[in-house]
Length: 297
Image (cartoon, rainbow, N blue to C red; front, side, top):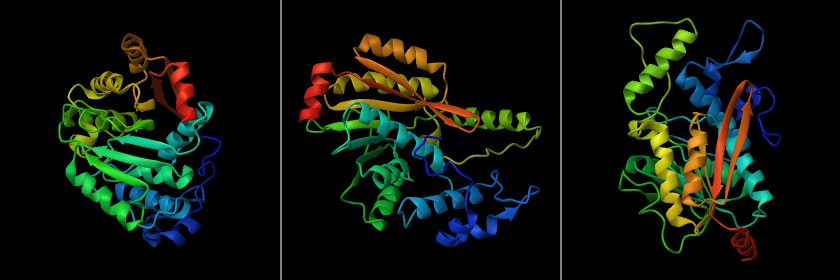
């Protein structure tokens, strides 16, 4: 975890339950005599993440359908901390305005980014229902002055049709779809269960997420390269474009593509959570002079 993470210690379940009583039925004492939950139970995981938001991030309302992706709060907060480090190195610490590509029903990055760093956000999504749910979360938490949402009505585009000529974003964040299809998502569950020694003929996907949240024609690689290409059309409107990248093998091809598109800087920000290593890729098209002018304005 990032050094600024609030989740570097074991969960204080008593405090979490105090702030979100619905977590209580899912907490039990394990064989090591410590409190925990069943992390294979989606309801328990959602309750834990809700409790974390209520306890640490000033959130009072966070409700969305169980079919939607339930983001893990510690790792999503880590993305915000690493982005803050990147912005600090670029002298971009005030009046931060962030574009969240694919904000989803949970609206998680805007909630965390505003709570931790007081950033403003514009969240976008291809799913109108998800945006309606996200808007309810924004309204219930009285965050309308800090977070707005925009509907992307063209599935073929990521930034086009969303960004206005007057827009100027300090950074863009993105959690791209992982899979080419729902069949691929099911295969991922089979592989995971096999690794745990729990094979079954009737496999049910062990993680939530709607098709638009999880799947994209061509998978993560295709989405990322479309994102790279479209970002090159808005070179002067966003200082840092960033994205989570789940498959490390995609990083090399992203670097090569961005060089062809005229990126002036490309960085890989490793995020370590326990034994898991994930990464955020960041790029900019601004020259050093343009970067200097940005920070002066």
